[in-house]
Image (tube, rainbow, N blue to C red; front, side, top):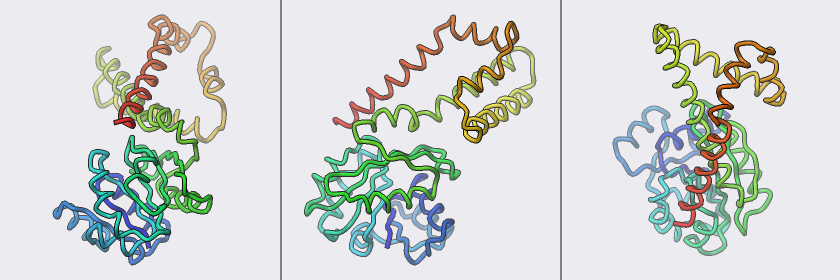
Length: 264
């Protein structure tokens, strides 16, 4: 039995992913404190919705899809109801395995996961790290569950803040680039709808090529860049304005902020 604690966007994505990959509704519990949201999920997925304490008693795997600031309260609420062989998977940003273990006595196994928002459309990238008591079999189990919303990679927990900076925050960087391309087109006299369609399809097409071809991004970039051509002129301006350095420093800032959040 699997329980999803929290039916926000990520919790709902996991629920939809599990059901779409063959899990029976009777094997997946959902706990959501906001009654209106609980009713919505129950109606949309014919889900079994129960209080968190009941979910902890009935399920052997719990996925905590809740806000980081609510984590300690939820852990304290469910700690006494968990069986010793339970596995707790947290998808809350900045919550370390040591924090999870501190509030879950009895050697309960924990997994820290960092998904990103493309999980909402089944295209997520999730990194996972196990706690002190977590076995390889339990990591395998966590990977199978989270694979329902995209790809999963295992990393040492010491890399989780960098994961957050690259893939957790990463979609926002692409949206920022897309927004900039659209606004540039509009500024040059193009209708907004046309500029938006061009930018959207260019970004998604380039991402598909990067994913499907297996080529290094440098190779793909060079394939587009003719000597003395339009792309070369554009890239020269990006380098002149230090865009590469700015992106690197932005990712470092995101990593540092993730560290601050992890340390409380």
